[in-house]
Amino acid sequence: MTPVLLVLRDDDADRSVPLPAYETAGAAGADIRANLPPDIRTEGMTLAPMQRRIVPTGLRVEIPQGFEMQIRPRSGLALKHGITLPNTPGTIDSDYRGPLGVLLVNLGTEPYLIRHGDRIAQVVVAPVVQARFDLAEALGDTARGAGGFGSTGRG
Image (cartoon, rainbow, N blue to C red; front, top):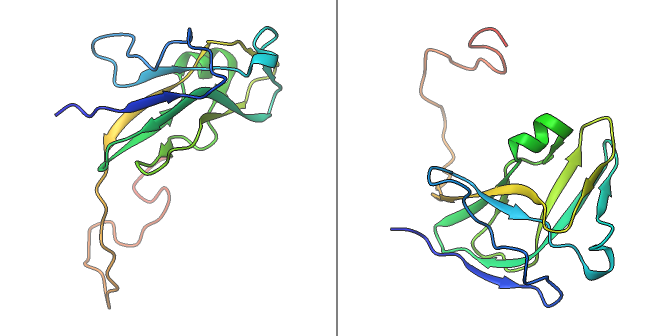
């Protein structure tokens, strides 16, 4: 079954900015675009080195129960300009109906200009399983045991 996400544009959103879309037939993520407020659409939004900002998409979504929308960086922006998400993947829960913003950070050494309509991130829709948490007296043994970060080898 293919999940259907309902999308609503914000009142001041530019309707000419495309909805999230898969760029190729095999793409796991759909590119999502900046939909800047009318007062900064012409000049864009600058992200200084090490600065974090929420970039508006002009969208709200209704995600079917049992799914989440993950917001992930675009690899080209990360490689070429150091633009990524500080909380990757960002999760949009199925019961959230507010404005969809993308939290970006510039890890590069130069300011980066986000233009109106730029592809700024990708969204992956994934199933969610909610677990039950039970308190236990002990946990089962494994070969790894209680080894922490880096305990399974180099790195």
